[in-house]
Image (cartoon, rainbow, N blue to C red; front, side, top):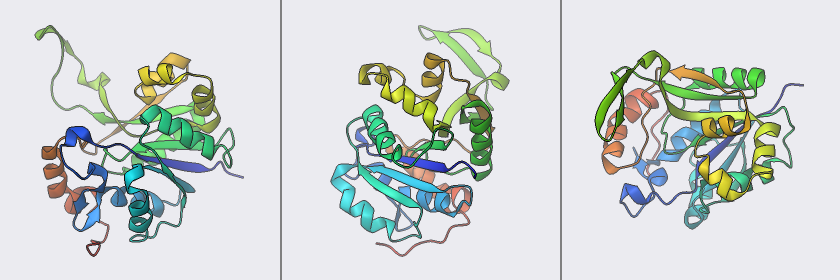
Length: 243
């Protein structure tokens, strides 16, 4: 029996830096909330068995309704978040523990990363099953500098540098053990999967990705996404009727 592959889609934040009334994960792209593109693509992946969504509590009912716009039969739970990323993940892992085994794969995808690299995700899954932890990383093509106090100190080889991307993941038992046995203060200091791995002696593979590693933080980022959504990130997905 193969291990289950579970996606934890994190979208419980308020998006305060985005500066808009509507949180960025619900921003409409071609008539469909941004997060639905991510959800639909994971739902279409044969390798994914289950999806758990942590959503902004003020949009819980809307999330349930929006999910109906796409074939989202793999969604097992929609949970209310909004308590900070670490607490939201911890609460979600508690729920997932009711149906997940130690060797199952948990993939954490932040909706602020508006893409699904299917090839890279499958490589992440394979690496997790081999090493215990893995994450997708965006390749660097420009010169990378190390600075101190705004001054150049070193040129870093771009071959050895990637930017953190989604998904990141672990064997379920490994990451659940960390969250069960760490305080929220400790977890809040470990702001990425890589930080968690380093702090807990977990082997973590980095899977380089060629996909543009866009993160939606400011309104200008959404303008970039609007121009890339249909012909780059989600070019194979149908445009949905405006909700």
